Length: 485
Image 1: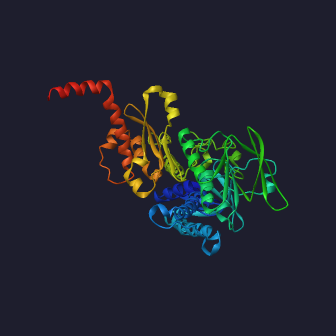
Image 2: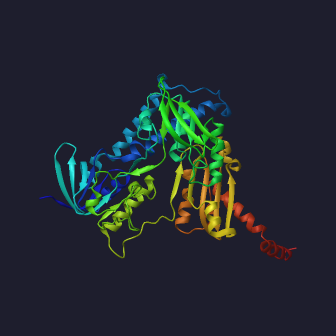
Image 3: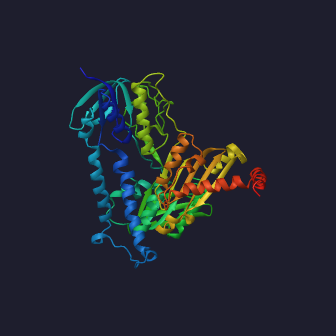
């Protein structure tokens, strides 16, 4: 007879680890079922390897630009003449961080870790095909599905036959491709495209929409397009790949359809970065009464699936595919799985920050100008501050970019930062928006000089200047000052 758990977590990525560890710490009887290894996409094929690779690429760029810091510029050479030295460093960093996600860590928290492939028998039972052989039936009062997502591969003529890489293979490349075509101009495409350009590859980014980084403010897309072009990255927007093939020399041919017809590009490698698909195959969700689509497992405001004792957190629910949101959603699941009305809470997506880690970084929280204008018209005010006026940015030689603030009255509607350490600078605004602080309240805090964080006060200054220029303020101060003359 199988044991019954308070909670079984399926999937050992970011959401699953938080859910399982948290449940164990409060004393719940919890099992974590993972078919491969703990850590998930973030550790092995996402955040950790990409940011490690990006750091190496930035070092290459800094070496080429050493002249502006008073040194002789040099062309970077790979250690031992091998690009593999870069991807080996990526592997080393993953290995160190993987120790934080070792099974023993979560077992010490009180979670039983089971390696195998799970399948629902009904909404209360799963059968696990154990990695070491055999099967095991496990029961639970509640489940949390946190199986993550995988790269979406479009059905384009010849793509699979020609061969390509996604984020699951790119960090294991041993030889630097001389020519790289990136399919997709979103965050993954631009981060990796810029990195490989800095390593020395010729890079072409192909984006089907009319601009790269389409989730960002159009001004950001235009600005980053110019920056990438300055680095020698070619960008084709309003274009789509329609055919792939190989030639007798082993080269890969990508046929691109644009408004002007077709163009065939010759390259050595193809990186596909056009989105993600939920990992739901083989889970037997139909038998559990869990509805899903090609894009997501359906969840309500409390992150419950259509089987109310089964929750879904992280990429698999298709809401926001960020590690930090997987962490947040797992905490929400824990709250709702073990606390009951009126203590249950809806997932709050009003203030969701994210960052694209290209250079300069692009960080955003809340609305962009276009959205604010559409909703609030002229009541939405926009303020800007350039990093070229930030003394620390100038001292660092990293003065590219700007910060853009959108407000309505005293309420901060959204912030976009394009510039050095934008992802770090964004959090002051995240806290402000979460707790309803105004820009003037942010400016009451003393910001250390010289720091990049002074960009916050620069935005506040722009806001204050506009207020002081208003007819009402001018009239009021005019009368007030007359009393002192």
